Image (cartoon, rainbow, N blue to C red):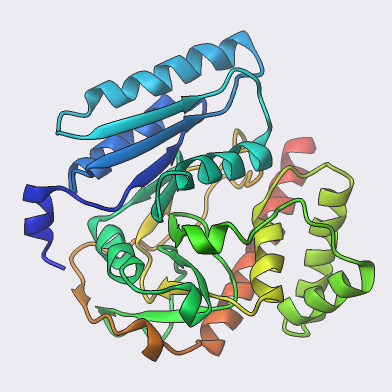
Length: 305
């Protein structure tokens, strides 16, 4: 895609921004979007849980006033707090009431320009017909990266900056309950028969079942696995996640290595039907997730003692 043309005419794929109580992060997103000047933005805010949150959310909404290009902004600002899982899935479903394609950015995700052209290239193709559930901009450092931005397939959906199509999203129900043996089977399969990763997933599922973890992305993982859908990922990271730290909702790491390789790369994208599954990439992804769990546990221990 010609990025210079995109600057002049605007970016045609609608973008959903899911805000929160962090106006400084929304301000950074607005600056990132200025590079592509999207024609349509959906903005969603869940309801506040306190007066302090209400004030921060008003400040978050005001950051949209800094948008100085021709754009249609559609807002959905709720009055009651629904929690992370319900609010995020509701936001996506709301935007898909009007759209067939959507790029989804939670407030702590900052993408580079290549992320948008990467999503646009594949959103113009049939995801569901190729057994692909989503397009992600997130990638860990790959040992065999050759300096050219390409694409590959993963069995793990990655939602730090992602895109999908309405006919995929409508098939997902994050409240679906699996039978015990069915859930164990999928968990074992998703773990690639790795006992450590299997144990980690079982622990996460237990927390979700006990309602001590308010999330929807693990349910999305089981949805894609049960239907044998893939996640389309770049070979270089195209996003930064600024939402780590003690104030984060779930990922309370003080810092995490994110190699931001996207901007300025040579690009060689191929037709969606020719993409190949990267087994080695998924092995590295599982190791990455387990490292995150380990360091998160260490940080919790330090804060407690």
